[in-house]
Amino acid sequence: MTTALGSSVERIRERYRLALDTAHEACVEGGAAGGLVTGPGGYAYASHRRLAACSRWIAVPIRQLVAESTGVACVRLPAAGPEQPSPEFGRRLLVAHADAVGAVARHAVDDLAGRTAEGRPLLARQLVQVAVADAVMLANETAGIAAQPEADAIVLATAFHRLVRGGRVLLRLFGGAGFLRDGPGGVLVTAELVGTLYLSGHRDG
Amino acid sequence: MVDLETVEKHAIDVAAELRGPDLVLDADPDTVAAHLDLPALRLHQATMIPPAHTEQPYRIDGKAVVGGSCLVQTVVTERLSYGDPGLVLVAPGPSLSGVVLDGLGDAAQQQAFYRRFTQRFTGPTWTFFALTEHGKGSAAAELETTLLPAADPGHFTLHGTKRYIGNGAHAQVGVVFARRAPGPFGIEAVLVDATAPGLTADLLPTIGLTGARIAQLTFDGLLVGPDMILGRTRRPSRRGLLGAREALHFYRPLLAARAIGVADAVLDHVRDARGWLPAAGQAQLDTLRARIRYTRDRVRAAASAVDAGSPPQHDIAAGKLGASRLAEEATLLAVELLGPTTLLEDPWLAKAYRDVRAFEIMDGVGDLHRLQVFQGVLRGVAR
Image 1: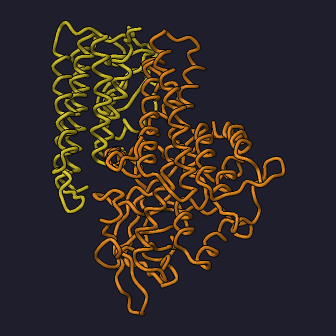
Image 2 (image 1 turned 60 degrees about the vertical axis):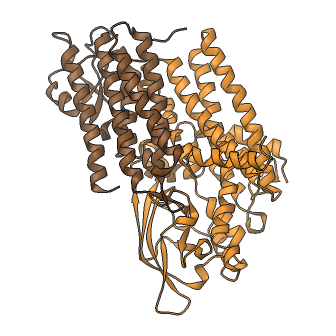
Image 3 (image 1 turned 90 degrees about the vertical axis):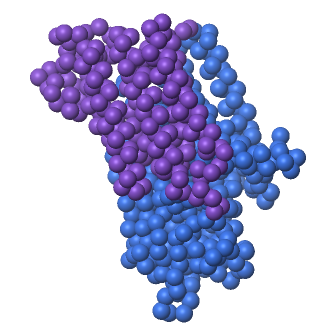
């Protein structure tokens, strides 16, 4: 990975961390434990930076190597409040995840432009082009769903599960680089972990 | 010689011992040495060593397990991966390098290589198979690692970088594919001693399979003597690239078997953790089980064909792709069924959730295998 592409991934990570922390800031209820929105079981994900600022609260760190590579950590707050976060928090997380998928799709364009197979740029292959297009369309659609006030928790959960699958398809374009914690895979896995805690609790049937 | 059914039952029994050590290894890959006496790992190594190079066979009820068969390795790998795919990957043994040695190596090269896995050799031996390069993937014909002529006639120096190499960070020996001349037949398979000057291994921070210590290998002038070039007396078309292709044909059913083993384990894990499931969830689980049974049969049939010397490439590709996607679907379904805190409170499932993402990427991503199936359709042989 070149330095330019590496910094592109860091920008995606930074944007995701910022969106996660902003969601906490906007949705945390006054006096909530640690200044964090907690999910089921009293767990919470936030950036290292935000967690450090909330250190006066008793928080048990939960080791999550992949998330930590993205600058996000998980803690458990024994004094946690209500278990189900607000729909607004879920919407913001879903938008952050969709934004990360879209950014990774654009990163794929830059990365694959410099890679060749059988003498042709990988980006010239239809299979690659449609995979990028599918990812961008999915990201846009998911963000659009999240913006709808009618979208309830089940709709958001379903949209999250679709986004997880779409993100994985997108990562395959990177080959082995998609399996590295410090690559685009790291931030999308982190978004999966965060969404699993806060968004996936609602399942029909 | 022990029959396959007995080997499979034995593999199922010993796989249970991999649970526990798998999580320890995931947290600290350097603890692998503590687990090498597990029967599962000894069985796994035994299946990889051909009879001609077996000094003390692994025995089940007094009967010897015969190594070197793709089908036997596929069955054993699947059942051991039910215990843990990471430990199976990290186990010492000839692995893919052995397949290349079997196909291309002369008698002296094979003897020297397999001697490392006998009782007389002190300590376990790990191997690597260095084909993949960043930006080129597993496209053997396009690799850029180079053999340059050295001062001594017949000698070369090795230059270039290989990436995503399993066991690369700690293996003592391995096969490296490198270009000596332009074109597909300018590629050589070279047996390299990893302790030789001119090789640096850097661990890569992977999302899963951390125990496998996947690495980047950088070759900077490693000296290659004529005895290190596999199949050097053969025509260029019968060595190098051919070795890579044959090894991958042999390996793909094993990779599929790993994915099937994990998928099967994940579904049993859900059953044990949840007991009762709503009808929709149970139906999803049952459907995945049916797909696992189908894929297992298909992969085993392909492995038999590999042993028979007629690898059906489209079938192998379909099996590998189908199995790797099954493993991902099984872990995703498990998380959906077991709830939002599962990945934080269930370390075994959390590890499987990360590990299975590697299967599709290993040995070429899905599109390459889909295209292989398409080629089978064109030839009228794909089912």
